[in-house]
Image (cartoon, rainbow, N blue to C red; front, side, top):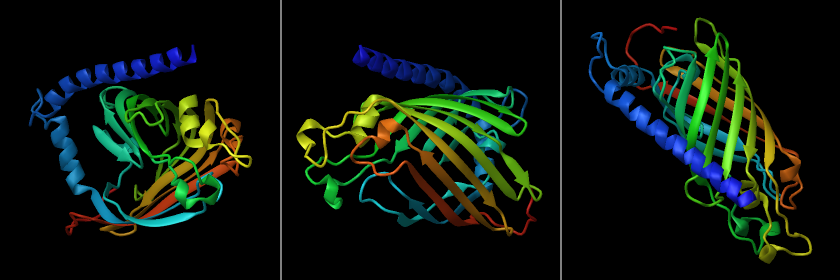
Length: 293
């Protein structure tokens, strides 16, 4: 019965994503036109025009703490191109934030509600050969998932929900999330802060893939473990600060409070995991114009 339900959820997410893709293809065809019916620039034309004037490149330092036994804080510098203004403040048709891609199908300028196609790069993974406690286990790899999302944006608050299914069939599971955030701007728009609270639900197969111990992997110190669906509470904030006409700092910090379905695993030795990043970036097209909020 569980397998039937799990397969049904997967098919439902895929069918919904395909339906949204067909709907969005109509909007895409209209948005690709240089001008709309009113003579104004098309949506994609506006998006690219805004993007090329507001894209920053720089260096990012990421730090993270995985919940696995034997793992520790990892600090890694990464090159990072990005649009500085957060997507909650604009009507960009496409945006990427951290590991989540959001393709708006419904224009938020017409309504506070919007629907989107969603892609997620799930970077949870471990290399068993690097961890003594994991000796004899198979590696767990990152995966790419896709599905659909919806959001409501009000004055100083947003509510967002999405669901994705594993496209690479590594975990063969689904992940769902609901987020409530409170975006704010300060100092004439130069400082953006977006604190948010998320609840993330992983299906049993996702928990088993990343935190389970298969029968052939079990040892006296590492008993067999098969997890259940988990609900992770996440406290997070992200933001940016333009301290000069061409330069800015961006950052993100999050703390995940793990469910018992995860912490009961013999592979996990902590109740929460945290991660974050800080980027120092420069605007690509930086002329002599004044900084505008």
